[in-house]
Image (cartoon, rainbow, N blue to C red; front, top):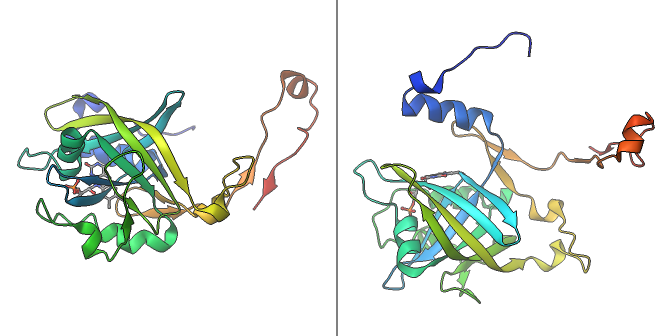
Length: 220
Ligand SMILES: Cc1cc2nc3c(=O)[nH]c(=O)nc-3n(C[C@H](O)[C@H](O)[C@H](O)COP(=O)(O)O)c2cc1C
């Protein structure tokens, strides 16, 4: 980077920091989170402040803002009330249905029904999963991180995974072409994951010997 524009985060508004982060940390995976409220009613919403942070234990994180009036979003409230949630993976074919579930309906409205999505009960947790999703991770609440008055981070431990049978083989290789996941970009943008390549990590000897790696870049 020979010429760059600098931004001191201490001098930016929350909105400006948000714009810079969502425009640069791309693509972000999308957790399409399903929960139940205390009365058992289903809820779904997408969250792209999301990632897998650890495999042992298997920990995922969600960044959930409060609503403009300071009330918690339904997802955060339901996770607190029931101690669980399910992360459904959004394939390209499900983009529009996912977007319906981001509509700020009132509490108690079943976004899954509005989006015409069928669900199955969770096997390990009470949250339902979206049947059309190519993968779903059932999670038990690990902890909430109260990072500010306007947002909190939820850590969940994955206790059960459902993966479309034609997307996973006996060696646990998950086929990204079948998952066909969407990523979230800045603004209202999304990215597909269809352009991929493999690039194996080299040993130090391979690097220092100047030898090409055993498998050079392969893919499209
Ligand atoms: C692709 C996408 C990603 C989103 N990511 C987040 C996020 O990371 N954190 C957040 O608070 N809201 C996020 N939202 C907004 C919520 O989905 C939205 O506020 C939703 O109505 C919350 O629903 P709930 O009250 O049922 O939880 C996102 C919306 C979309 C479309």
